[in-house]
Image (cartoon, rainbow, N blue to C red; front, side, top):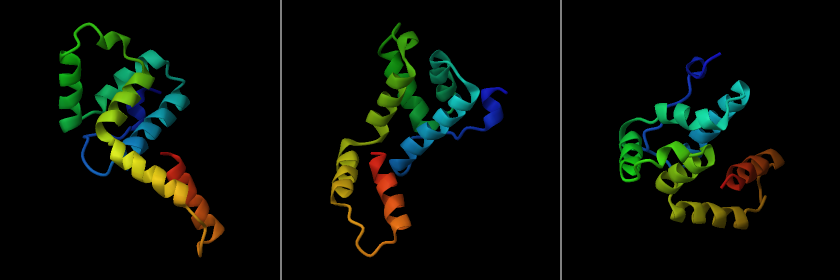
Length: 120
């Protein structure tokens, strides 16, 4: 199967910062299923950028001619997260994680919240 057969989500850079990680995790799942080599992951991910995210990506590399070919999947993820996953949001998620207590939640509810916050 080819990448397009998996109907990966598009990413426009709009909305809740959590969308960034959901989008990246969705792509990583597809890449694992496909056994996609690192060098093709960035190419496939670029194809899923739309709107503001695509404009940002093109502008970012237009200021760095000749460097784009060296962009790894890890670099891509770091760049996208840095741009669309603000540090203040990450800090808030970390604060919530460190303050997390089960309280009146069921074990399942607590585990879901723990897992959600641990991703940050």
